[in-house]
Amino acid sequence: MLLYRIGISCDLLSSRCVFGLKGDVNANIHYVDETNVLYPAGSNAVIFNIETKLQKFIPGSEKSEGMTAIAVSGNKRFVAIAERGDKANCSIYDIHSLRKRKTITSIESEVRVRFEKKFIFL
Image 1 (tube, rainbow, N blue to C red):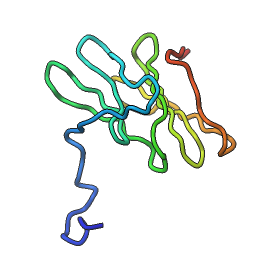
Image 2: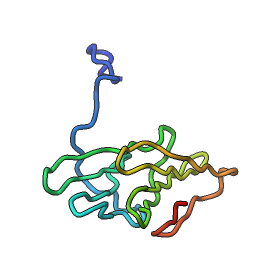
Image 3: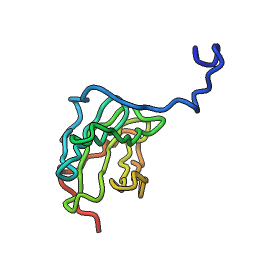
Image 4: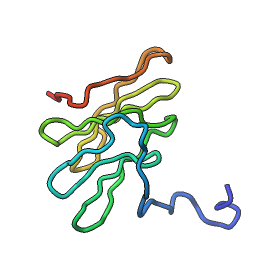
């Protein structure tokens, strides 16, 4: 990678701002609360605060071929992100802490992860 050639470690780099919207993701824009909007951009899910203009990021899986759908729980506490790849998966994140809570992976590579716009997390 070019950055290694000039002596910059990729571990030191982090996203500060992401522009765009990944339009081929099902249910791609959600209000998390009155001031935060969740949407996919590139390989990230972005939580954008419309008042402070700050962004928080939920990165996609390392071996993912891209997000296919996003769903937010009814209580707005969790987000499910479906991704395609060698093994399709659906990751559940806590929206407030941005920590991954669970990953559901397909058994066969041909299986596509699908879920409805709204989901119930018990």
